[in-house]
Amino acid sequence: MDNQNQGCTKRDVAGASFSIHPMSDRFIEIIKSALNEVDTRKVHMNTDDVSTTVRGNLIQVFDVTKAMFLHAAKTGEHVAFQATYSLGCPGDSKAEAYIANDQIPLNAELVNGINQYIAAKFALYPLGDGNYMDVIHKQIEAIRKYVTVSAANYSTRLDGDALAIFEGLEQVFKAVVKSGSSHTVMTVSISANSPSHENISTVIA
Amino acid sequence: MDNQNQGCTKRDVAGASFSIHPMSDRFIEIIKSALNEVDTRKVHMNTDDVSTTVRGNLIQVFDVTKAMFLHAAKTGEHVAFQATYSLGCPGDSKAEAYIANDQIPLNAELVNGINQYIAAKFALYPLGDGNYMDVIHKQIEAIRKYVTVSAANYSTRLDGDALAIFEGLEQVFKAVVKSGSSHTVMTVSISANSPSHENISTVIA
Image (cartoon, rainbow over all chains, first blue to last red; front, side, top):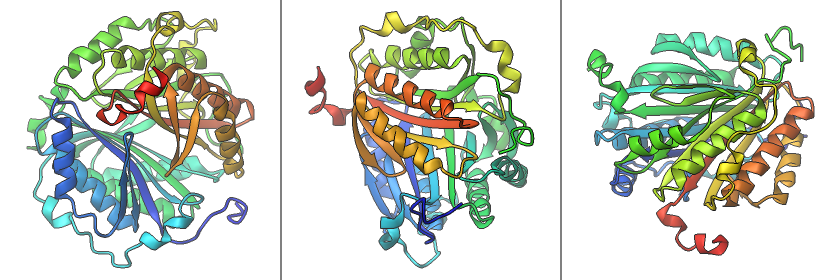
C-alpha cells in the first residue's frame, strides 16, 4: 500500500474511541468517579455525548482505557465497555503532539489489585492488507496464552480476568502493528458484573 | 484478493453483532421488552452475555437492529447502542441457511412513527482493499444526504433523527458492498436520551 496516497503518518500515535455504560440509575456518578480516579496526564482525552477519545502512545492508551473500565467495574454494577483501538493512517497525523515519550503507564499499579471477571469479544481489522485473515488468525492463536478463547460471530470471545484479557489485547494489537500493518483497528466489547455471569464468576474468584 | 484463500463465500449473507445498554436499573426489563416487540422471523438471532448476533439478508439485519434500538429508546431512558455490521468473508459461509429470500422488512412500518433524536458515530472498514480510504471518504460524502455529518476521531459523527440515520447507514453499507468490497465491516455507536442532549433535541422535535 502506498502510505502517501492514504495520507498516513508513520509516527507511533495510537488512539481509542471508547465508552462505558453502567446499567444503573447511578450511571453519571459511576462514570465521573472513574474519570476522577484515572491519571490521564500522558494522553490527550476528550469526552462527548457518544464516546471518549484518548490519544497518545500505545502503552498509555491501553493503560488509561483499562483503568477507566476497571474503576467503573469495581463498583459492582453491571458495566459494559466498548472500544475501538486504532493505530496508523489516516486520522492521527495531528495527534503527534500528544505523545508522551516515556513508556511507563501511570495507572497500572493502582489497578493491578482489582480482580474482575469479564466476558469480552474482540475483532482485529488490519486495513489495506490483502492477507488480513492470516494476520487475524495468527493473533487469535497468540491470545490463548493469556485467556480462554472461543469462537463467536464476527469476533472472538474471551473469558477470564480483566487484567489478563487487557494484557492479551494489548499484545496482539502491538504484534499486528509490528508485523507491518499500516492501519490497525481493533474493536473490543466487554461485559462485567452481568446477571448472566453469576455461575461463572466463582470460577476465577 | 484471492477470495478462495481467505475462505470467503460469495452469497449475500449479512450480519451484525450488537448490544443495547440502557443506563437504568430497569435495564433487563427494557431489553426484554424491546426483544418482545421486534419481529425476528426473517433472521437468525442469538443473544449471549456480551452481545446479540443477528444474521440474514442485509435488509432484514438492518430492519431488526434498527427496530431493537428504537423500541428501547422510546422508553425515554438513556440508551446506548453499539453494532458491528459485516458482510462477506470469512465467517458467514455457515449462515447461508438463514437467508430469507424476500426483501420486505417486517418491522419498518411499526417503527416509522417513532421520532428519536440520536447522536451517532460510525466507521467503515472495507477489508483487503488497498484503496479503502477512497471508499470511506466517498461514503462519508454520500451520507450527508441523510443527516448532519461532522468529523470525529476514528469515526464520523452523525446527528439527527434515528430513522434518517439508520437509512443513511444502510445505504452507505450497501454502496460499499456493491462497489466490490469482498469483506465490509461497519461499526456504529449511538446515544439516545442522553442528559447531554437536552439542548439539542428540541431542534428536531
